Length: 191
Ligand code: NI
Image (tube, rainbow, N blue to C red; front, side, top):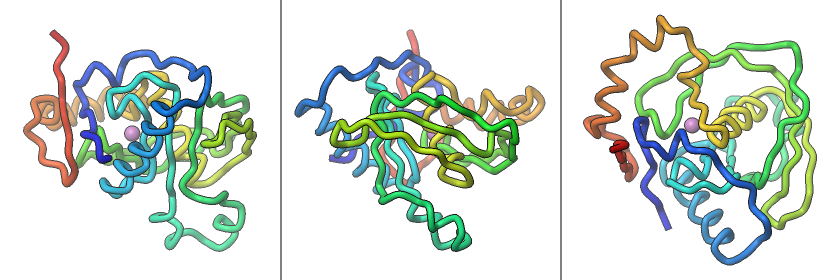
C-alpha cells in the first residue's frame, strides 16, 4: 500500500524513534508499504518517520542510481532493496565528502551536504537477521541520510545557516502544503 509521505513541518519528522523488539505482521506490513511508497515516489530511501511511524526502520533501493555509477562501485552493492531495522552506525571515516542531497519529505530542494565518505552499520535485515556492512560512495550517503531521519535529523540541519535562510520561503511553502509533489503527501502542523 502506498502511504502519504510526511512533509517538512510535520512533527513526526522530528520525533524520536523506538527500537523494534521482534518481527510481527504489523512490522512486515510497514516494511512492505515503505518499499511500495519509496518506489512509487521514485525515491532511493525512506525512513519510518516519513510515513508517520516511530519504529527504527528504513528502506533503501539505490537501483535508480546504479546506471550512473562506475563498475567498481556497483561491484560491492548488496541486493536491493535493503531493509534496516534497529540500525546503529558504529564507525564513520574521518574522510568526508560533499554530495548533493534531496529528500522525499522536502520536495524540490537539493543542497550539498558534507558527510563521512564511509561508514560501518550494524542492523537487522528484513528477515530479522543481524548484519554488518561497511559501505562507501553513494550507498553510504543514502544510508546516512536515512539514519538521520531515525534521529529526527534532516539534511537541512547539516547545511549552513546562510543556505537555510535562502530556502526559508520554499520551506514555508512546503510546510503549508503549497508545494506540489508527484506522490501522495501529507503535512500535519504541530498545534
Ligand atoms: Ni530524506
